[in-house]
Image 1 (tube, rainbow over the protein chains, first blue to last red):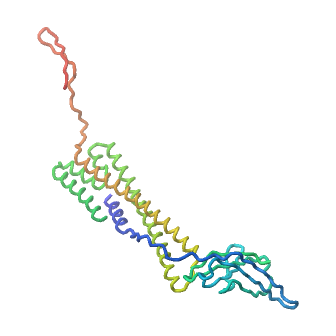
Image 2 (image 1 turned 60 degrees about the vertical axis):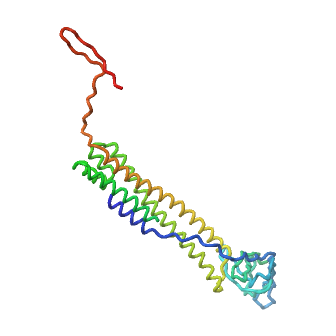
Image 3 (image 1 turned 90 degrees about the horizontal axis):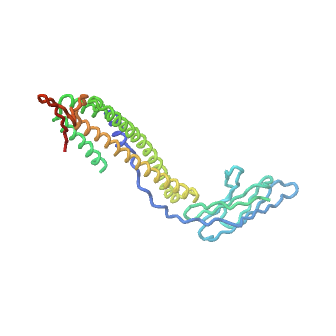
Length: 122
Length: 178
């Protein structure tokens, strides 16, 4: 029992100190892009490079520093394919990306990234 | 504050033991020391086996509960502190230019809130077991100090109705206690 008391006392006094609950970060929600449209331009005969034009809209473009363009895989993994400072981008790709899911997110001036707007390549 | 409160309990128990031991017989002193080492064992020496089982069982249950609840509390606090460090670190990351998804910030905040609530719940359990353990231990000591050894003797009770011979007469009498 003395040993038990010692164990309890050691456990009690050696317990990790719980820190204070922090204040919420003062960051604003970045505007999420919407109306994302993907159009494709087939390569000329003898060429293999496809062009994909992406356009989208946001509620407040002044709050956005840059847009990130992603290719989203079947398992939800995403790979960044490029960036744009405007509401459109043209991607050149060797081969067809028909059925591929494109995603666009907005990065605010505070470096906070919004959720993705997605669309499927034709 | 927590240390002072804990020491206060320990000091009260030690004071009670010293007072009891100074006025007790050698057998009672041995019983007190036994109960000090293992709750219920002093009562067993005195012949109070039911109380011995109750005190030893209560001490084991509250002691094990205290250790387990303390371990769980430590784990919850460790988890909260880790999430807090991650959340607070986002501010520095954002200022350095690292892009952080808003969903990640809000997700970490929710997890951190849940971990904090969990640690509070586990802290309450830990404190409950702590008080129960100390009360059990103290009650065990007070009981063994105040109890006498059970020798198996019972006080002879006077029969309520009696009979005696007086010369040639037989006299019946009744006794009433008030």
